[in-house]
Length: 213
Image 1 (cartoon, rainbow, N blue to C red):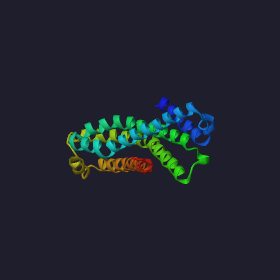
Image 2 (cartoon, helix red, strand yellow):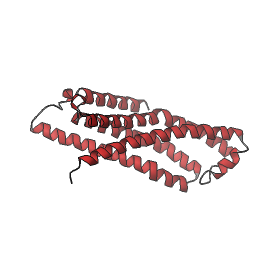
Image 3 (tube, rainbow, N blue to C red):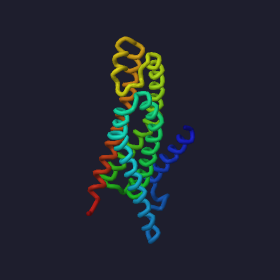
Image 4 (tube, rainbow, N blue to C red):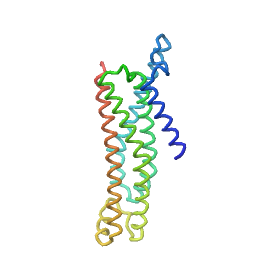
């Protein structure tokens, strides 16, 4: 993930530069070209936010639940181990673009208190996704693979749901300890994801207030 780390770090620094030094990027200029730029920036903000919001909504409340209820548990876990890095990369990148665009449109020095709160929500969503991508997701995947190995040795993991794992864990202390550790790490990852989703939800409320239909 070396290239990804460098890319997201560059995007983060760009976002910070846009927010705190917008004149460097021409956000204070005037004229026809400036009007076109503003439209493009607004479009970038809207599409990036909508993508992040939609992806988070689907992955958190729809797609993951449907897969868990219908796929064999090990198959579900292996699929999620491939999807989560892509999911957090997508949402994190979209949050960074949306943050940069919003910072361009609302420079920090001249922003109202409400606009600064919105910048804070977008920063939070970006930070929570980075934390999940680089901290919690690798830990969760590593713990999942270790637990899968123990479960295969005890002929479980092909069932749908948790029933056999919980039954076996009562007689296998190692599996019980793994379940506890996995639950803690996965819980932190889920919490960060919910906080990110909540931050995006707050921004969606702000955007809804700006609509004039």
